[in-house]
Image (cartoon, rainbow, N blue to C red):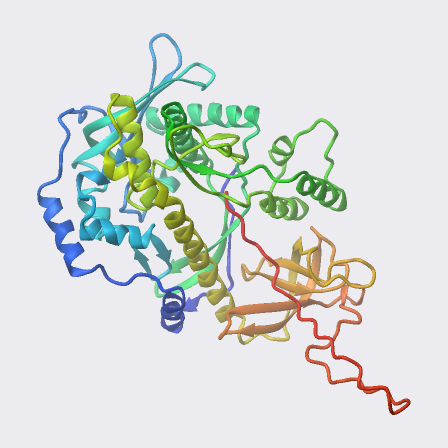
Length: 529
């Protein structure tokens, strides 16, 4: 599917947003500059990394990332096997070659948990001298890596897995837009052609096992010179194929850990049956045909997020992707070991420069493949990591949401009272039911500017276009509220916030009637794939 980007009418000057981004950093208590002792350890490690003996610098690896990225965790080389099938060589940056367990640098990474990305800056998990320098798989540089070799049959199913430490050298730094253009023009490197071939096969295997990859357009804060704007973005096909290689490696890692009965899995429980029943009601409301015998994962592969009704349904499906977390185990396999969206066991191992858990999960896999004991520094930390990572995930999600909210509010602060075309993409059925049993709160998506926000209305038509009026854009709280303008969708009989006491004038023994206050809550849009 080609990338769709809807750009806002006007961008927000950078100077107007600096104070807002600073406030978000303070509110969420994001880490500041690296402590001097930890930074000194990183600079010393750059001069004397622990290099493995195995030399794999002859592999013509390439990286594939956004054009601006410098923290390059992965490099790949793909080839066909002589007897049929494929071989995936996947090099992952070896952060443990630079970080000493228990050091000031190590302790600081545990405090951070992951890299936080904001429009005006990155707050890295590791000092940039490592994450964008000595440990990054930059082209032309010899680097220590965990080198995965995954063999696939002709259908794309895994037949063999191995990971070991090696020295590698990337040949080229590729970016998504340029690579997609080369594929479309028929001028792509043979390795990238193989990425399309293998990625497509892996997407078919994902469909077979009932896995889910949603193409819901995401809001992104994008730099345009000295200003920032909001855009809706969906991944390019090459991004999805690249993601399949990462998923393949994560599932291979999980299978090793389950076999060895020790590790750190990324888990997500199956949604309750009522969640699927609700989605079927939503599909009927949106006039999306969901035939008997068609699974949820099969249905979503037929939908186009450019169609308003389809976009609304895909937005609703994110409610199934809740409860993701990390599960550590040592001896035996946990009862909840699977990831319902992946439809398999799965582990995070491919982004150790940006995510703390991956360093430990990768270390477990190397030890299991070598037939040696998992290092004590890894084993002892496994039970602590789920809490560390889940806290970092929550903070990272909050960073993303608050930054988007800030830009939305800045774009709309002077437009209270204006009307906009919008699509109703969500209804919150848990709050503010009126006397007819219909929800009075929804979420609308504007085309211009690229805003998603709460909308008050009566019996809002999910998946349909309506006119809305901006009621509030509060810079202090970074919250926006619309209301439907069509009388048939306008809220009726909504209680007034903080209403005055109602005095009943009757016999003296009757006292003032009690005051009941109802305050609408913000609809939840949290989802974790």
